[in-house]
Picture 1: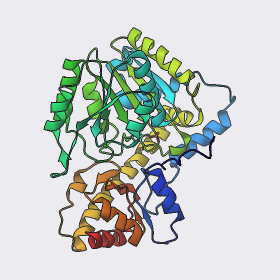
Picture 2: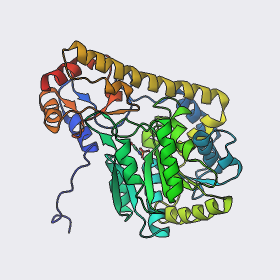
Picture 3: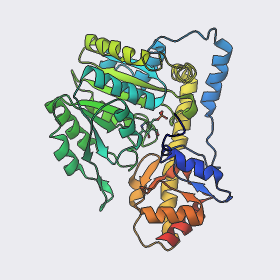
Picture 4: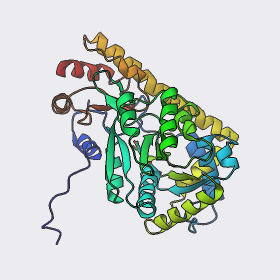
Amino acid sequence: MFESLETAKPDAILGLTEAFKKDPNPAKINLSVGVYADAEGKTPVLSSVKKAEERILKQEKTKGYLPIPGDPQYGAAVQELLFGKGHEIVASKRAATAHTPGGTGALRVAGDFVKTMFPGKKMWMSDPTWPNHPGVFSAAGLEIETHPYFDAANNSLDFKAMMAAVEKIPKGDVLLLHGCCHNPTGIDPAPDQWRKIADVIQQRGILPLVDFAYQGLGVGLVEDATGLLELCRPGCEMLIASSFSKNFGLYRERVGALTVVGSSEEGAQKALGHIKTCIRANYSNPPSHGGAIITTIIGDPDLRKEWEGEVKGIRDRINGMRTLFVDTLKAKGVKRDFSFIKNQRGMFSFSGLTKEQVERLKKEYAIYIVGSGRINVAGMTPGNMDRLCEAIAAVL
Ligand SMILES: Cc1ncc(COP(=O)(O)O)c(C=O)c1O
């Protein structure tokens, strides 16, 4: 049965990393997959995480199953990070959180929930978006629609075209929004644009699904929630998929959350009941370790302060690399204006490099970039910057 199968296509992004690992060139540079690396090119375990793990190891008393939505303390920690302490949504108990394996797990559970409870409703997403979005939601059986997002000529958000499409989304359809640090463009709506998006969502009765995978990597932990908080209006309903892979560096622990906001506590609990049914039929209940780390850090003022400092360190390094990249390209004689890269936020930038240029960078310089020209800025270091910019100057 298996030999006659057609060979599966490798994942466009993870496949590149496999090719990178096999590349014997000692000066190779990986700017493809969305993993943070420090100035030495290593993906470190955060110090706050190590300390929390030591504590968990000492205090852990059981390996019994967690409840289907995970530990309630974890849910409370997630909600505090999303909405801030004492927010109306938390105080009125109209949010309910399920611990999921990573942000991808949260997106899939959200997709299953929408498909089973609201049959016929479509999932709207930006063009472009994270390439796994259409994969996850198609696998859940949802029909996918896209709206314009990127103005390639000006390297900016095409807000007018986006809104023209959003204003036609039928009531009850789902609109997927990147909470911050849009992947792959690095371009987010400004606060007044978020307000306009929230107005249309409210007027039309659209269900927002906020994919929040980069909180803290853009401007700050609180500032990055500006768009989410704009959507948090009285009586609003919403789904939020959190990922803690990047801001806690917990990639392989697979820790995320799906939070449902109802217009009342009753609505949130009813939705959670169906989300639990989706989880039970999928992976049954969540893995414990990553969630325990987050609960420990958020619940301890000293560890939390240390973690916030570490997130700032990650953010500052990425933004520092944006500036150095633009300045070094200029110094290497590149005439094209790349200054827009300084204004983008998060790990990624749309560089504007063509497929052919990306291919040459891989073949001739062992520099790995996704075919769309998306660059992981967090893969740049002061040590590889000269070589990277010289290669880009050559292919341009
Ligand atoms: C936009 C976006 N959403 C969600 C995720 C999911 O992250 P994870 O499943 O690793 O937590 C990612 C990871 O790259 C992402 O870029």
